[in-house]
Image (cartoon, one colour):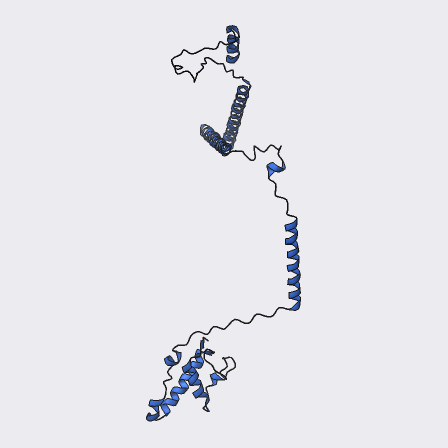
Length: 274
């Protein structure tokens, strides 16, 4: 049952009720809070307050009218006025044992020793991968710039898109070929039609893979050939700007003659075109 706090009016009612011979049984039960030494703020159950109110109200009805005017009202709402829900105070913390105190003291000493050791001999700073292995090649795993990362992502996305498109095209070709063979061989028996359509679709799939593999091989060869070609750069025209001369913009450009002859120039052009 709900436990409430004893108010001054409830304390007065208890003092008046304890001076009588007939006391409600609920006030003497062991499961209820003890009311032998009541005080303001002590716990009391709602049932005990109801029993006190009923006992005092019964006494008032038995008394004469002259005494009735001088008696205090012990209605239930009057007794509950100002009362609050009783919150039991926290129990006092148990005193730690001597073993616990000795253990905590030993742990504190060990921690102080470790802290002093760290202060005297600080640990070495953590080395990064590049500091630990300065000559290692890690450009593929750890790009140096953000531009390299973005370029790699774009290449991977393009490869994935191309591969997905290729897979879809091959699947469409296989399904279309198998359906066409199935419809073309409608006069044959069902096992023959099924075997023919599956065989034809398998051959189409193999042919698609072979053609795509050849396409990739040609692209790889073209890239390797492009890397082997040497690009020649030649100075076609040069001029000198003299800052000290105010009329430099009006002077004619001074051409520097190339040391390469026309025959050598033609040979280089032919080698480049090849």
